[in-house]
Image (cartoon, rainbow, N blue to C red; front, side, top):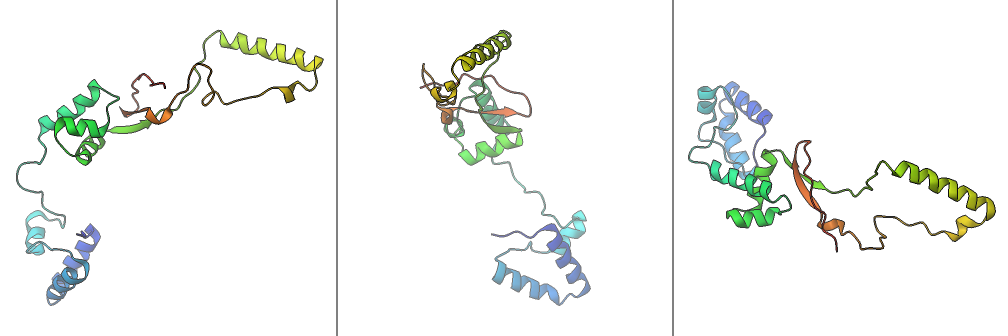
Length: 182
């Protein structure tokens, strides 16, 4: 079911005030063509609140504050948990879990694998460059005999499945997580 924007509501409200005969036309047109339900009397809503926006919904919230806290805490306890798993543990839908996490400023984070550099690496890189320069002077075709590969996809001790690595974090704070290896 479609909803009217605030601008559309203001235009309709002003039109109805200026020309009351339009109210019947708007009601028929909107209900038939756009399948929009209007509140029983938009003018009363506007007079009560001074605004054309919907009134807040009455009744208890569908999800209690305790349930929201449980959802956030379950993710804090196990940051590698998925939204589907959190939803089944808390007996709510996955959409509800995602909506709550979005409101709490949790955002999906896709790991980007990078090589960690240590203090000794600068010396090793310089040593490697000197060695390669000496080898290139002795063998001018050396570059044709070397196979260069991407470290992220070629590894002697195993590969990293980056599709299994994801997390959620709050704002700019980062969680340190173990990366699952195949």
